Length: 194
Image 1 (tube, rainbow, N blue to C red):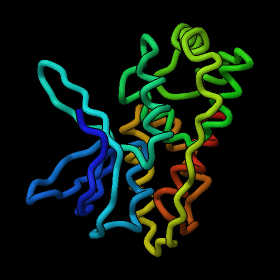
Image 2 (cartoon, helix red, strand yellow):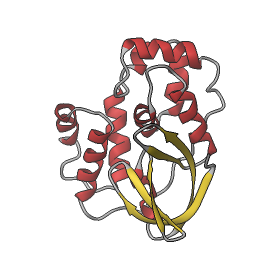
Image 3 (spheres, one colour):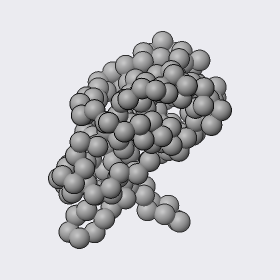
Image 4 (cartoon, helix red, strand yellow):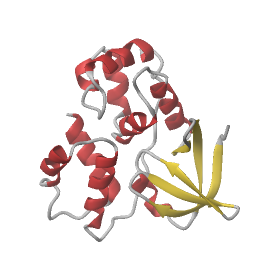
C-alpha cells in the first residue's frame, strides 16, 4: 500500500492530477484538483490511498494526512464509495460535517451528492465521535485571469455527481466574475450544500 508520493505535477484534470515520478505519470483522483493549480510543473507531496478492484487499480490523493484520515472514515461507512467521499471532502466544510454528525443532523448530510437519507443515518451511526480531530488546511492560490476557471469548476462538480440542472442555477451567480476554479468550486459547493 502506498503512503505518499513526491513527484512533479504535470497535468490537472477535472477530477484528477497526473504526477510524474521516475518517468511514469500516475493518475491520482483528488477532491479538488484546481487547489493544486499553483503547483503545476512543480514538485509536490501527495498522500495516497490505493483502491484495488477486479477491474481497476485506482489512486486517490490528499493534501495531508488529516484529509486522508477523513476519507478513510467516510469510505468505512456502508453506502459511501471513494467518489462520494471525495465529493464530501471537496465541499471543504469539514467543521459542518463533524457538527452535523455529532448533532445527528441527517438533513444536512443529505445535501452532499449521492448521500440519501439512509446513508446519512448510517454516517451518523458509524462516525459519531470519530471525526472531532479532523481538520484540513485550505491552500492559498493566485488569482486566475481567464473565465475558463468557471467552466472547469462546473465540470468538476458534475464529475462529482451534481446534476446539470442545479449547476446551471448556481452558475448564474458567477457569470461575469473572475476567480480561480478552486474558489468557484468552493463557493458553489457551499451554495449546493445549504
